[in-house]
Length: 128
Image (cartoon, rainbow, N blue to C red):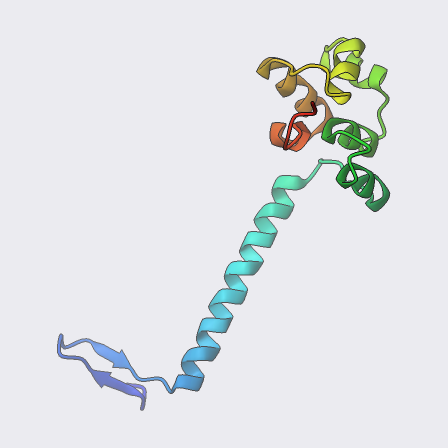
């Protein structure tokens, strides 16, 4: 039996740790959990386009809709996205300019064609 082990009232072996040892153990567990979360997010994002800082800044400034930002990040024109998604170019243009709210099936087709989630291409607040 380990020198730090004691017998608990239940008859099982118990381990006594100093506060410093306990903190180190917790930090290791938290680090392992954080690494697992990062690894999972990385695996799930494989194949998704990366958004360059310039495009992200334009989206955050309201110059580009989320769909336009992701489309450009994927290196696609509206016509190319239309061909890949089966959505009319006019629908894509009107959605990017905030003139329409497309159906869920249209959003699904656009998001799938770009390789992102639906919530990535939908604006947080509709334009007025």
